[in-house]
Image 1 (spheres, rainbow, N blue to C red):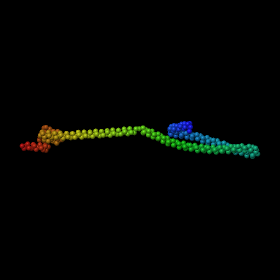
Image 2 (cartoon, rainbow, N blue to C red; image 1 turned 90 degrees about the vertical axis):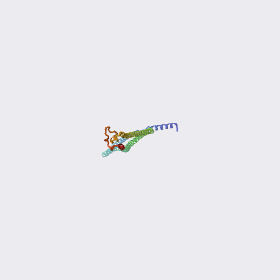
Image 3 (cartoon, rainbow, N blue to C red; image 1 turned 30 degrees about the vertical axis):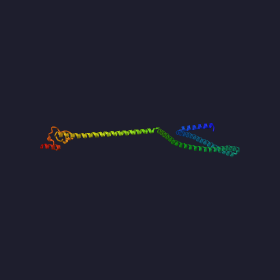
Length: 262
């Protein structure tokens, strides 16, 4: 293999690669349909020309047929008049027109065949164009979907999923920590309330006990139930006999009875 052949092959290979990479399916399909429509226009023009030529040939054929018949009638008329020479000349004219008509008849048949073939080709091309348009739309939609999928895959590939997932994990840990802290604060607040109420309850018991002892030392006996419940002493000017004996402390009553007997 010569050097020029090798260089030519390399150049053609590079050109093919360049062209293949530059081909856009949507644009190529659109241009293909445009080219087919242009071919259809030219084919329609050819069919129109073939039909027009056929019509002209048929007219010429009919004219020559008419002339042939007319000169034959003139030959008959000359014979009837006894003019053989004139009849012979009319037959020669008739023969010329008849030969021309035969030749035109062949051309007319060929023109009809050609026009019929062109019509069939035009009909086939119209069907192919209709099919090509449908296929173009389908392939264009598939090409666009493939491009969109490729862009999405590239976008997904460029995203650092590990970093994103680790960020979610960190935020989840933080939320859990915040929830735990909120729960701890709620529990501490509940403990403080319990402690405060417990202190109030224990303080009330001590105060009641203190009032009771004061009443015993002062000789006033036990406090009325209402005073003990509210934690207040009875008024100072309250007579001692106004306190009902049933409300006195039993031990104090016993001591007072022994003193009276002594």
